[in-house]
Image (cartoon, rainbow, N blue to C red; front, side, top):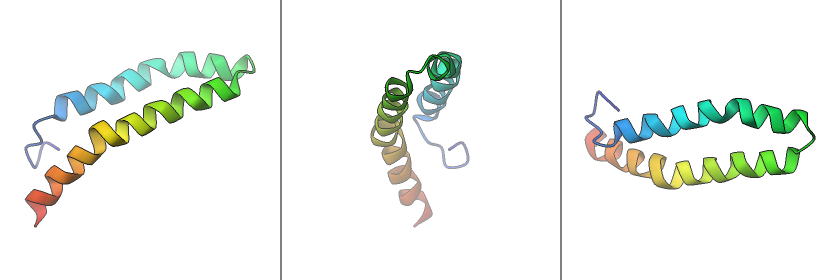
Length: 66
């Protein structure tokens, strides 16, 4: 992202940091038998991240790699 001057790099990185900060809560839910809620949380984050962060990043990179 840095190499190709991605303008939303900070937001993209913050999204990853938020997930990492939630890992403890996610792990605790798994240990308490809340697997479905935990998996839904991860799925929601991942789908949102792909749609809102990864797709724009991919488009930016494609513009600079062509």
